[in-house]
Image 1: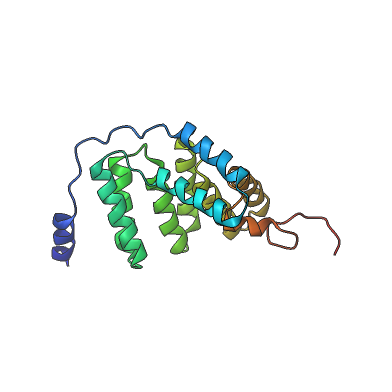
Image 2: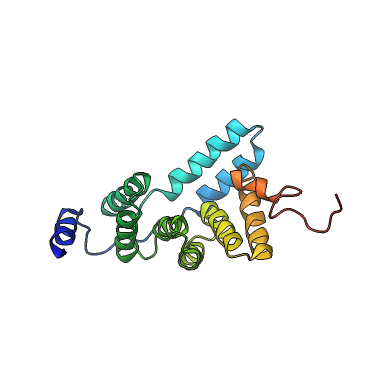
Length: 184
């Protein structure tokens, strides 16, 4: 049984001894938030959302990028165990790179492990407070844990940064995180 795991480890891409610091993307993201708020329609807004993802998915170096890409490929193939292992490698190698934690949290969420997802999302947001995907992921995770007021507050922050998030629909009247206290 140990042989397949050993082969998997040997076949995994090598990573350098030390990950460089994650670049500061604060100004770049602020510009994209402004662009998202100014978007005139869904098409423009979603295009800006895509640009945000390009920023978050830009790993600190080629080795980290290779591991991130491998984890995402495994996730897209529904190999959640393999994806989780890749994201474990990524956060071990680049503990200051928020996207490693965000991606690992997504795998935990998909595996119905919301407490693990929340822990990783909290780390991702500590490292990159304006990571809108981590903000919305945290809102969904809090919702799954039935912590609706916290979920609503978190999603309002995410939607302030990017009003084109599909999760924004959860804030509508009558939706799970919509305004409370209104009579129908």
